[in-house]
Amino acid sequence: MQKGGFNFDLYQRNVELIEKNNYKVPKTTKTGTTIVGVVFSDGVVLGADTRATSGPIVADPNCEKIHRISDYIWCAGAGTAADTENTTGMISLQLELLSLSTGRSPRVRTALTLLKNFLFRYHGYISAALVLGGVDFTGPHLHMIHPHGSTSTLPYISMGSGSLAAMAVLETGYNSKMGEEDAKSLVHQAILSGILNDLGSGGNVDLCVIKHKSMEFFRNIDTTNSKRKFRKKLPYMFKSGSTKILEKQIKEKMEKMEIVNEKESQIEELEEL
Amino acid sequence: METYLGEKQQARQWSPYINNGGSCLAVAGDDFAVIASDTRMSLGYSIKTRYSTKYLKITEKCSIVSSGMQADIFTLHKVLKSRAQIYEQKHGKPMSTDAVAKLVSRLLYYRRFFPYYTFNIVAGVDEDGVGCVFSYDAIGTLERVKYSASGSGSSLIEPVLDNQVALKNRNDIKKEEFKLTKEYAIDLVKDAITSAGERDIYTGDFVEISVIDLNGTHEDKFELRFD
Image (cartoon, rainbow over all chains, first blue to last red; front, top):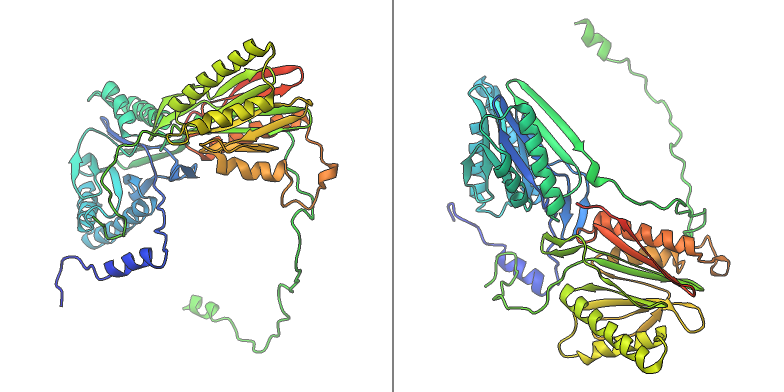
C-alpha cells in the first residue's frame, strides 16, 4: 500500500489515450493577464485587467480576476483561469470555517499559508500565480504567491504575462509615502501599461482598495480601451426562413394538473410555536 | 522526455521563420475590389510596432496584402515592386492584374525549397473592368476567388464573408437578387476586420483599407483597439 508521495497509476492510460485513441489534451483557458498590488499609508490597492485568452483568441473580454477571500482580504489571480478561481474559492471557504471556529477575524498571513501549502502540494501543476492583499487587525499586507508555492512580501507587486510592463510603471512611480489617490492612480497606470503593451492582457481596468474595515471594488473603472471603434450602420438581417427548418415539434408546456389530495400547509403551525 | 500529460519535450531547434501575426482580407465586386490589412506587428506576447505596413500598391488597378513574417513580406514586396517597374519600363504600360497575379505565383514558387513565410492576397480590377481577388498559399498556389482572408484572424473573418458575400447557409435571400454594392462591401470589410480585432490578440492598432476600381485606387486608414 503506497503511503504518501505521488500516484502515477494513470500515466500509462494517459499516454495510451493520446497515442492510440487520438485523445486531444484539452486546451486550458489562461488568463494571460496583468495583476498588480501596491501598499499605501492606510491599506492596499489591487488591480487587474479583464482579458481571458485561449491561445491567441480572447475567450472572455471582460472577466473578473480579483477574487474575494474574505471581506477585507482579496486576491488577484493569473495563470489558468480554472486554477485561480477554484484555488481562491477553496481557501476562502477554509478561511471562513477557520475564522468561525477560532472566533477571530481572519488574517492575511493565514490565507497566505493556506494558499502556499495547497499549491506546493501540487508542485506547480496548479498554474495559479496570485497577488494576495488585505487589511487585518495587524495592519495592511501584500504578498505574491508563485504556482510552485513560494511567496514574497513586498510593498509593490506585479504578476502575469504583463508583469514586466506593469513593473516598469511601478518602479518609476512608487514611493513609500503614497496616499490612497496616488496608489490608485499608480495601479491604474500599471494595469493600463499591461493592457496596451502585452497581448495577453486587455479589456478594462478593475481596482480594489482595501483599508481598515473598508473595501471598495471598482469594477471596470476604465473602459476606454475596450470600445469597439467601428460598427457598420446597416445591421445583419436574417429574415425568418434563413435557417432551414427540417422538423417541427410543438409540445404543450404544462400538462393538465389534477389536484388529488389537499393537505393543509404545515408552515402556519410551526410559526405559531 | 515525456511529461505525464503525454507531451513530448523535443530539443529546441532553431527556425528561420517567425510569425508576426496580423490579418488581411479582400472582397471583389462587379466593378471594384476592396482590400484591407491591419498594421500590428507582434512577436510572442509583445507588440514590436503598431504601424508596419502589409499593403503594397503595385499598379493603379492592383494591390497586394500579405500576412506572416514581416521580413519576408518586406522582401517579397520589394522584389514585386521592382519587377512591376521593370515590366512597365519594358512594355510601356503598367502590368495587368492577371499578370501581377501570375508573377506573384512564380516569385513564390521560385522559393519552393525555402519559402517566403507569407500568406498573400492580390486584389484589383482585371482587363474587363471586373473586380478580382487572388489568394495564395506560401509556395504560390494561385486561385481566383470572390473574397479571401489570411493571417491570424482569417478563421474569424472567413466565415463572415462566406455568409455575407457568398450567401452560404442562407435561405432568406437568393443569389440572383443580391447585388454587392461598393458601400456594402467597404462596410463589411471594416466590420469583419474590427470583429477580428476584438477576439484575436494579434490583430489591432490600425487598418489600411483601399478601394480599387476603374478610376484608380482610393486608400484610407482607420483605428482598431490598442489592447
